[in-house]
Length: 453
Image 1 (cartoon, rainbow, N blue to C red):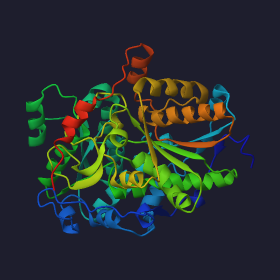
Image 2 (image 1 turned 60 degrees about the horizontal axis):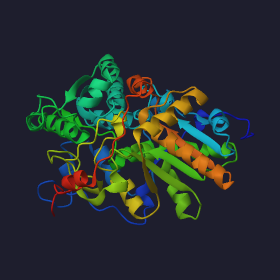
Image 3 (image 1 turned 90 degrees about the horizontal axis):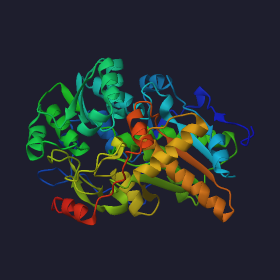
Image 4 (image 1 turned 135 degrees about the vertical axis):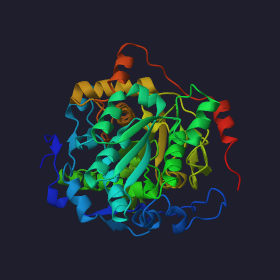
């Protein structure tokens, strides 16, 4: 099979992974324990049980290398998996590069993004425990849409708190959630005490994922039939997303290639973890592969944050996690990549970053959309703003390699399409888009609210 001529690399269905990969089995430095928000002591399973089913709690703390995908979940995965890996011949031509650029296209899922990879198992494990209702937060709406569909497929109710700036920018995401039967409200809302407090503090707040998480957790804690579901950050979410990178490795073998660089955008971490983590064992074994997480300059968690214990939400309901953070009170600018507007980074991603096994970089919004426009016109797919961060860096790496006179194999995670994000594209095309980056003073002010141990 010639890698030079092949455009679409399709993995046979029977080769779809039967197990998720758990990077905790191979990490040189074990994770620091999650701490109880009140006692500040290490959490036990009983502390998480009010919010999560035991099946997910077991995955959260597991150090087994491979965790079996339940047959019921695997059958639903077959609705769109294995997802295709494309060789970006059009983009290569537009860049006049000899680098080989590939993109793993998760936008073929029913909801148009990678988020369904974790939504399905999360709802499955909750249903097995008798839970009938789930609450969650969502930034740009991809996660809320995925959980809404997964709940409908398994017969659960779904309540979504959507960050206000994205609720206003992306009304069609809310509409799709409604089509799937979910209730979606703008956050902060008046339905919860944490939402009312956020509005009292700043009636014009654009909202944050940290506020929306507080609302969803508060809602879940008030009902015995309800659990909370998170679309990124936590270990079990990264485990579920590992099916992406596992498929990529098999697909690259089919064309006798191996990446020099693997790239994914970084908000809470599930997107990047999904494509990058399965390459960690190779890197530890001596393979020269770079794993690059790309975050927005407006919310530079790894590149400008600190590695410390912090809450995952504003109200302090969630466990304290040791992670790269800008502080739970940090309010990012209202960029169009709403899924990347989170103050903290996955503890797994954060620890691997501290250990030097992965890299991080940040990019400005207008440059991201410049790359998205080039990709759209070269490949025919309009990418999500979040995914376009990875495209930006893939293009930069290809151009750098061209200047240096070398050829590289570059793989990026195109984690979703942008057909619900056309307001953002219109904003860019009309010249109204602005770049944002917090000042050092803003970041330091937010870091002052980090919890003390």
